[in-house]
Image 1 (cartoon, rainbow, N blue to C red):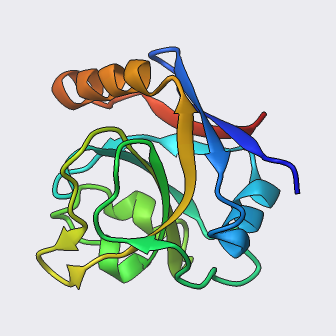
Image 2: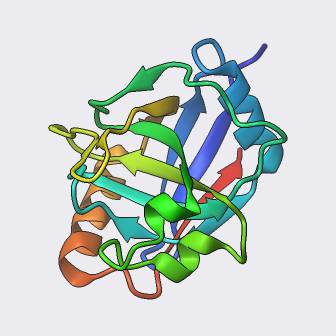
Length: 166
């Protein structure tokens, strides 16, 4: 299969990077994401995982992907897929309980971009949170990382994180 690429962008900040899908390491997840593209929504900056931005989406795969190519220590440029139940994310401490519920659905997908080192996927309420690494940024990470730092410091209000095929 030829290499497949996606564009990851922050719309309001007009910043984008290019990532290659890791079809050889996470084929089921890559197929699910690719078939559902374009995807996007409000962006959030991680509180606990550190150098991560993400969006929450309704479940889009016909069946939940298996935990393939997992990590709890993502590196800069990793694109990760997480699936959570609405009850896991639907608490006021996270700050997005309404978005997490997605009109009664029981599964919420978190598509994330890690932009810097020293990330650790652990949740104080539930423990380790392994993610599926389904893509790797191959171009534009420095510009995206700068925009992510601005998002952390200036705020995410009105910003969206988007994924589309290239």
